[in-house]
Image (cartoon, rainbow, N blue to C red):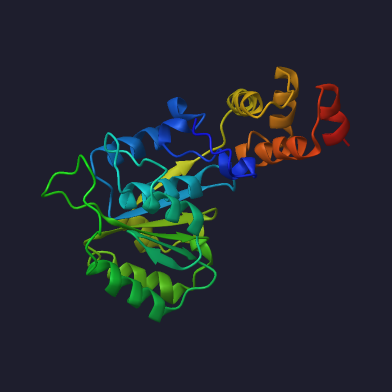
Length: 260
């Protein structure tokens, strides 16, 4: 697990920087496949990340953005520390473009913006030649669209016409409502289903973070917190962040603060 203790928000500080850092990696076909495709530089042209909120879709898209933008490429993986990786981690989906990553919010896109991104990314040569990269190996740019189901139908139609021409880019659509994504995009893309970890996996992650942050947390309380959020790691870490900010000194204070 990557520790970024300079970030005060535990949800961000302990965001996975590698697919293997997901607490449910071993039990997730989606994460195992993405990890292997990333290692082999074999991402599909169009990826559709489908799943409930807080299942790791955004972390996965940022991770692929780091992989594309990393200046170091340690063992063909993003280092999570260089300028390219930090830019991606800090940009989220705010219409920003640098390194090899562009993040968008699907609620606020117009056709002109899509065309401009296509122009930039399809003619953009990656600025970095990471260690471990073969001279003939092209690392794709990453364009990520969050809340893709909220994009206007004409935008989805435009993406459909561009996807085959976007030869230097992998497009990632993140959605909680797959039925709102154009059937043509689904047919041309590869859909990856994201799910919450088990309660036990989330509780184990909480215990690791609590130990690293010197937060008094018992196994029973870690499982109780995970249960409150149906195993969602982000919300569970939010509770842990609350406990840290309140400066608790004993396990007895956990349910006193977080209970009804």
